[in-house]
Image (tube, rainbow, N blue to C red; front, side):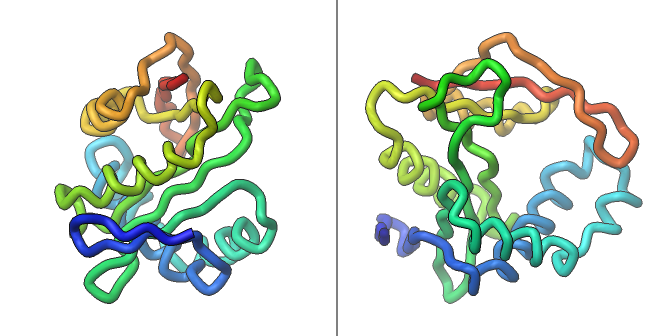
Length: 172
């Protein structure tokens, strides 16, 4: 799969060779997006090298779908989705596991293009869910613009010994 967007970004299926760059974007995005939610000491400790093998395993396993957005000669972002892991999910339900951008790509329409590409791959009538930090209003706005809505389900996760509330959005 390959999609060319209006802003000179190419979105394509990821492969194992992309693992290092995905890990770099993943960590850079966390450090910027969660700086007001998670302790600086924890964010500073995040190292892309620690996530490379995780991404290699994901990409090698063929579980779900991982898309990358490339432009300016580099990886700008990625999205990952597949079967829903929610306890109340039906067999065909999907879940957006992750969508992250290099902070330098924020505000350029790359996330919009990634999300549109993800949603184009979802069959009509198939529900998709995602989890996001309750305090991440920027993400809430983004997901609402793409047809997702809060469904009232919450969970508490523990990140760096900090309890954080996540809320679920659903579409379809």
